[in-house]
Length: 173
Image: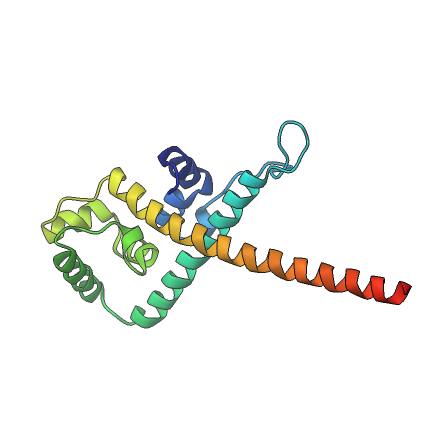
């Protein structure tokens, strides 16, 4: 399980919170350091690199979900979208956070303030704690997928290296 402090710092460092609540993706400006993969000693900081890679994957996943949702519901009226959110809230028995439902970014950009939408549907707006829990679930899923992919890549590199070494050994004899 990912430490709460790590998830919270990643949530803010990713710029995901601001990305989720802004009108368009172009509005988000994520500050980049000149050499973000190096630590204070000038060595590769693997943990920072892994966190950044997971952030990129998570943003891409949420963007793709939002795009697919937008394509499917582009012709819907705002009232139909409100009804869709209301049905999700009824099934969850609470107002979901935009991170918890498919197309959350699109719904926020289309319907406006999530707190006002919650109030108009008769639910209390989700708090920051719920956002953190939703983000932690997403983060853990992406981290697990990233770890599986890295394991496959490392195994493939190892296999190729062994084949190359075997080829070199057979050519010497």
